[in-house]
Length: 191
Length: 218
Image 1 (tube, each protein chain N blue to C red):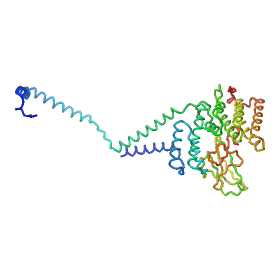
Image 2: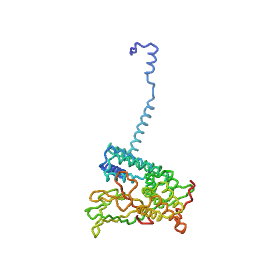
Image 3: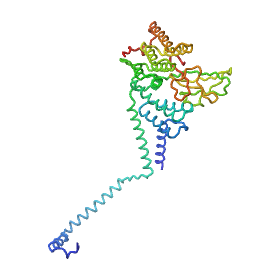
């Protein structure tokens, strides 16, 4: 479609001409408008000088680090709330195993060169609790402080796991090598 | 830059704190089994079950040279038993008591028998220490080939009469001695239990009032 004015119909051309003419505006109105505009800018400049606007800028690395921190903290709070929500209130009087008892373990092994004790009280660590040889050289001994409870354990004699021949074997052996059981109670010490 | 360093340090500390909650598994455990075991431990933690017995079970398996599959099965079995134990105990979270109840399940005592033993109808509360000792003795007696039903009945009678912790320990030692002397396990238990009940009748002050119970109606 052609866009020049000559192709338009006459009534439309006249209307276009009328709209193009700017209405007369008095000079004093123009001056007032100009003055008020200048005054407004001046006030803004004054205000900006008195109360400068602080612009915050954060580097991308800081923003990423902040996001990570928020995610981690959110996770911690959520985990804590969830855990608190699912743990039911105990309905049975809780025992207070605050008083650990001195429990003695010994093993007759005159030919052994090294004996360690392992069990659920030392996370089955074969290096943390070495036993010492008795004065007569026949027995190996150790005393361990344990709170009341039931413990499964064994002796590692020169690298080989051996149950305590004087203690009852564990009923819950899952691995084909029996452990021994020691019960430590407030009333009767250990047995 | 200082802000950035502070943030990174905070993240490291918080992450380390979270990492510390995760139980360390021995390096010997293979990747696939490790994923399964960590999932089991995380599930237990979310369910409010103790996770130490689970990691102990893994470490025991490793020390005993068990293969990964056997360790995974043992851990899965233990977490199931701990969950059932907590249901039987009515939501108790005492780790020693949960462990003793789970051990009893593992030894073959049925959940119904255990429920009757630890929560007889009308029972208000029980001393967790006495109950734990009673369950530990129950497990050891069952391990000595005493039928589970007879063992539950004997331990239940003593609990009902308020037997103190000491009596359960003595009972276990006596039964063990009798068995080693050649007496049949069940008759050794029955005879020793009767003797302890007579002792409680003769000296009512000996009974532990905290653990004295009304007779189970079942």
